[in-house]
Length: 148
Image (tube, rainbow, N blue to C red; front, side, top):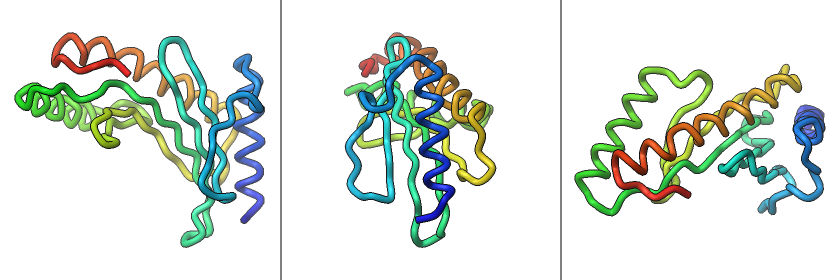
């Protein structure tokens, strides 16, 4: 593991404190010691912040992910929603993109931890929470998706 990993963890924990939460109570379980994660509640949405050391690259990454909705059961609405997600990704969400994790639509942002600063960590958390909070109601109303 490298110092980038430890520095990124410290930046995330400092940011969590700055936004009024306790890093110790927001820690999420991880499968290995090359990853640290925190589950945060921001408004009505969940945000998962992860710092991961990728051994194959010898690099550390910051990833912020927020569930938006569960896909609608109607196949026609699913296709329409997936098309909208691709259109939104192409239009540019500014440091975010939509993706799928199983049947859940998520908003995600990831960057290398090299030269990471506290402002970027805070912006990533707030931005992903805002994206998720903005689109969960829209997707539920327009496509019959279920808010997570």
